[in-house]
Image 1: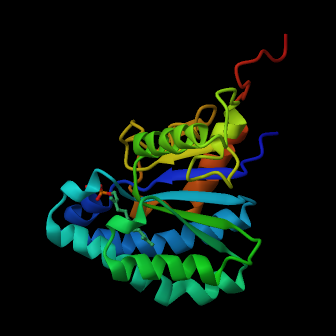
Image 2: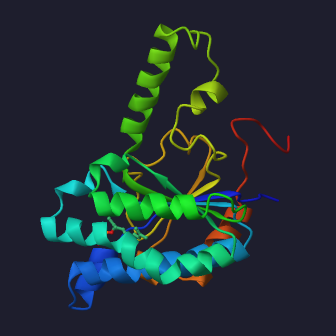
Image 3: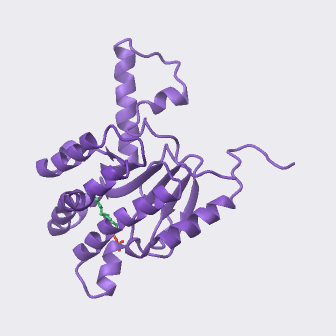
Length: 234
Ligand code: FPP
């Protein structure tokens, strides 16, 4: 039986979902952020321990200023509405990405959510904001190189040790990566962490991604034959 400890999701399709209903793209992001709560609770109830969500990529700055500004305000709306419930459920919030490039108010909301929940041991709800995987790997390599220069590390390094330079160093590898809305690409997400993950691309947009769809994905994951490069059943 495959245990899905760490689930990562690329929450795609908010904009198209909103447009299809004749609404502005931002309303899709609002419904999408409410769905983060629904799916975090469902994932916790289905036994997931780490849920890592792609909320804003290093490439998303290319969107219109209005859309970017709106997404930057979402964490404040989100935590105001749901933080108490998350704390009651023992969730621990972690923010992954280069936060110093975000508006100061957004940084504060995100940091406060981390701080307020840091002693919790329930679901680790990890939100990637201004995150890009190649940049994460580059920053890790720079930090490692600096440690070598400073005599704190040697060239003799194993993968597990290099993992400690990643922004996700506290998390186990991703078991399952889901992308919503039909696109079949990784978009610079968790490239190091998904080395042996199972991948699922579902047609539903993120606002349509219900707990039932999550259950379907986890059932499908159960049927995958994970071999991690080895051989089984011979
Ligand atoms: C991708 O859909 C979605 C985003 C870039 C933003 C996702 C953000 C959220 C779901 C809210 C985040 C929540 C918190 C708590 C910070 P898209 O707009 O690219 O969809 P499209 O492909 O249809 O245009």
